[in-house]
Image 1 (cartoon, rainbow, N blue to C red):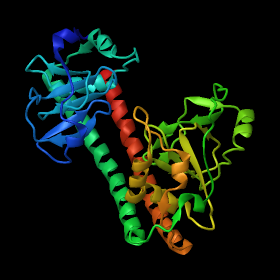
Image 2 (cartoon, rainbow, N blue to C red; image 1 turned 90 degrees about the vertical axis):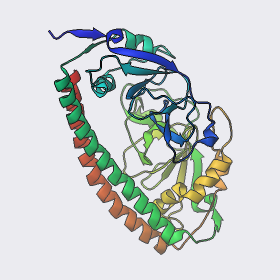
Image 3 (cartoon, rainbow, N blue to C red; image 1 turned 30 degrees about the vertical axis):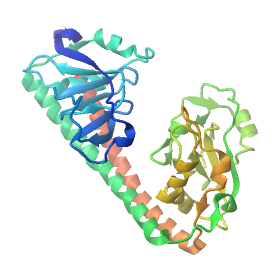
Image 4 (cartoon, one colour; image 1 turned 60 degrees about the vertical axis):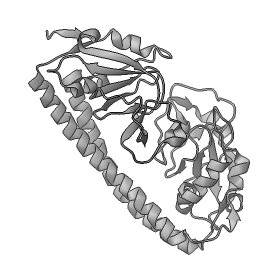
Amino acid sequence: MKPQYTFDELFSDETRRGTKIPASAYKTKGKYPIIDQGKGTIAGYTDEAEGLFTDVPAIIFGDHTRIVKYVDVPFFIGADGVKILSVKKAKDNPKYFFYALKNARIPDTGYNRHFKWLKEQKFLRPAIDEQNSIVERLDATLHLINNTESQLVKLDALVKSRFIEMFGDLPLSCAMKDVCKIITDGTHQPPKFVREGIPFIFVSNIVQDRLTYDAEKYIDDVTYSELVKRTPIEIGDVLLSTVGSYGHAAVVENERKFLFQRHIAYLKPDREKINSRFMHALLLSDGVQRQIESKVKGIAQKTLNLSEIKCLQIPLPSLPHQNQFADFVTQADKSKLAIRKLLEKQELLRASLMQEYFG
């Protein structure tokens, strides 16, 4: 059996508090990245140097969020409650241990208690040549995934560009309520859930402005039949997230049954006035997103009310013009589907390699 090493044998750790730079001062470009430990992404940049963490490469571990991120340039942390891990031994490859932590199934042990769990874990420590080989292969796989994901981003940008080209100069001629037969939200009372059945979805099911059906909660046919009367879902209807992660939209694209919580708004387009694909792009357009941002209320949990959705001001080009744009979106979606299938294969390869190396 290969020897295992304790956390303390491998890592030095430091509790790090967030930068005092206010979020309003974050730049889109700058010398130093500010890492959002809540999502593990770059929240912005700054040119300030005071408080900069320079002992890199480092592994960021969110004690509350369980996010793990590898950073190899000087950086700031944009939120409190993170541990910054540095590998003690000069002959070790820090990125090998980053991948090991990424593969770890970190249980949800409660607020600010995940690091205690981490400290109790043991790790394999192969020879440096093997560490480097593993990192090289995983890096190559991740590079493929990133390139594939960038193709999806480019297609989204192309659709957005075509929308602006076709409709950017049109006046705001009507309100959203004028082009919808129904604007309401999901059920306000939690239904009786069952082990399996019809998916009951949440805001988290609107991913990259598409609807996913990966559900943790389900309802039976009787509950569905009763609740669907309020939101008679059909292909072409549009969903819009309204609480927390608000302003994300998705079009219902198939006849699969589902229902949803009240934090999702339900818009049934009047098909004689507006095309669903056009409405979807419209909701995601900069002009409408700015309106949404100005209308949300609340501090701890920002909310977009139905009354505000109804009053969103929109342009309304002719239906043939809308349909022309929708045809372009349909072709782009076919390309996206092929890219997503490739991405799934790459993700499976990555998962297989992680399992092979880290178990």
